[in-house]
Amino acid sequence: SAVISQKPSRDICQRGTSLTIQCQVDSQVTMMFWYRQQPGQSLTLIATANQGSEATYESGFVIDKFPISRPNLTFSTLTVSNMSPEDSSIYLCSVGQGAVGYTFGSGTRLTVV
Amino acid sequence: DAKTTQPTSMDCAEGRAANLPCNHSTISGNEYVYWYRQIHSQGPQYIIHGLKNNETNEMASLIITEDRKSSTLILPHATLRDTAVYYCIVRRMDSSYKLIFGSGTRLLVRP
Image 1 (cartoon, rainbow over the protein chains, first blue to last red):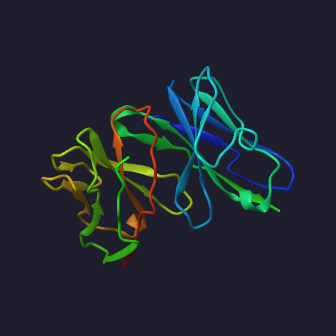
Image 2: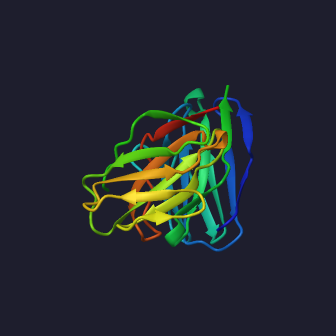
């Protein structure tokens, strides 16, 4: 299965600033996905990152707040913009791999102060 | 998407079998049952999936009822490292289809 490297693993940020999270995959994949996991909660899908086109966002998530880039088939970034304490969560990227389902990165633990 | 219902929490003794149930009464014919787990502070990990036949791999067994409206994940000899949140998810095989998580079952394996 694919190996995903996600950076940074954790960060503490000031409110009002932005953080860009990187997701690097060791093989080419068509679909990459970004999730948010708030403290004590399950995973919520933010958006699907498509190479060569704009990301597709789920209800409740907008591009201005969570801009996503997908410049090639092995890399994507998620930016959390104008952060507030409510954005404190774990952010995870994932790739779809057909029969074996999805592989997940280890996540970025974000704390906004 | 077919919805799934799982108990909020369960526990079992170390060395015993852990049987985690999942209801998916609205599952359609082309949807598979997937199980993932998330150990604390890690990303979710794929366990097993199936369509209608029972499946077994090195991690677990998946028993799907004949009407496909429910399934059970079996960890045959639970260890302390199996303590995690287990998610039952129904999805199509098409890898472009998004994976939607429910609330899962928090399994505690007791010494």
